Amino acid sequence: MIDKLHYISQNSQGGTHLDAIMEVLDAGGKWIQLRIKNQPETDILEFAIKANALCVDYGARLIVNDHPHIAAQAGAYGVHLGLQDMPIVEARVIVGNKVIIGGTANTFEHIVQRVAEGADYIGLGPYRFTSTKQNLSPIIGLQGYESMIKRAAQAGIRIPIIAIGGIEQADVSLLMNTGIYGVAVSGALTNRGDLAEQISAIQEELQILHPINL
Image 1 (cartoon, rainbow, N blue to C red):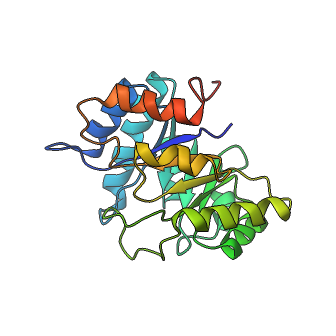
Image 2 (cartoon, rainbow, N blue to C red; image 1 turned 135 degrees about the vertical axis):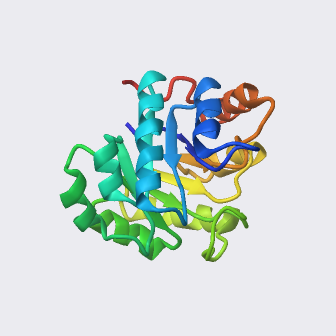
């Protein structure tokens, strides 16, 4: 089952991705995407192994961004691939059929493409501008989500579609009204003093107080 609340990691204030992940897990997060850019793969693998161990301890699931080989070596639950990353078909050969593969999309045509490629879920975005993403794709906005989710339903597409990109807690109910499956957040949860309350509030908006069964 795909969780409806995804946390995309970033460095915590004065700390690392692992510190931020630990804080989110401690506050009740259950679906963690390790997203480390511009570092050697050996370093990312080390982070992935440690992050996966943390997720196992907390009954959560780890998704590794960009790197199928690292996801496989770390024993992660899944891998997420951007449009410019390795094709999903090739990644499937590396990680096998039991590992979840998510794929990024920015247009309805990308959604159709990801379904054809065999993705297990789609990260559709960005919702608005976000400084955590380099080479940002065109902003989708609320009307864009409404249009694409409607077209997907008309086309019989049932794959979970996750909204991503600059999303805050106040946006969640609006996005859910479009028919989106769930949301991915990063800055909304990183370095929050009220992190447990924030996660609980988002989960209530998503109506997923108990999102996954392990």
